[in-house]
Amino acid sequence: MTFQKLAVIGCGLMGGSFALGLKHAGLVKSIAGFSASEKTRQRAQQLQVIDIACDSVAQAVQGADLVLLAVPVRATRQTLEAIVPAMSPNALLMDVGSTKCDVVAAARETLGERLLCFVPAHPIAGKEVAGVEHSDADLYKDRALIVTPMESSGATQVELAKQIWKSLGSYITELTPAAHDA
Image (cartoon, rainbow, N blue to C red; front, side, top):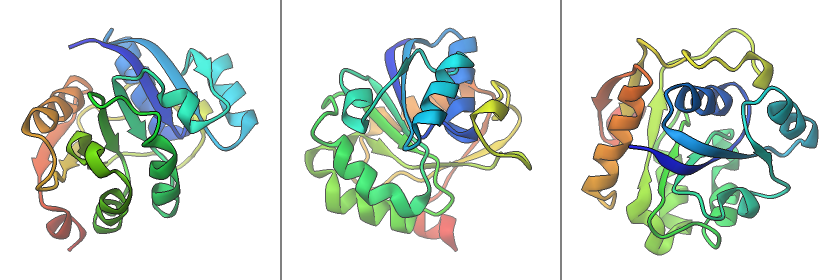
């Protein structure tokens, strides 16, 4: 399981830690990152969290076989709209949002044929500090990770998502989006 290109949309603590975790595990060859703040993009590249700082979501996603959406839940719909036209039909798309029903609703409204590629997830991890400079390759180690596949999520994609999170040291639980939010 090696990915040619990871696109991290949101290069803060969660996205940056995911990128570093996969990089340290040798599971990704190249990491493209986008954050709304140019300063964050440049800092992520300086810290070698990402290899390429992109000026747009579409640029980051282009050619990626793995995409992680690590933006505030309220920005999910707008970000998914920007991802869809550039995303490969074979890419795995995951998120790390703390709520799932609203993320799933945004995905249903925006992803169209790419819905099969989407596996929502919620890592129960974090720090008291935020920002890319606090990214940690071991952030997800020995932490719970809740996978909340939709009925439209592909079985292959769900299993691949679980393998990725396990490779970062997470303990996997599977719930429906509604059960997660309850």
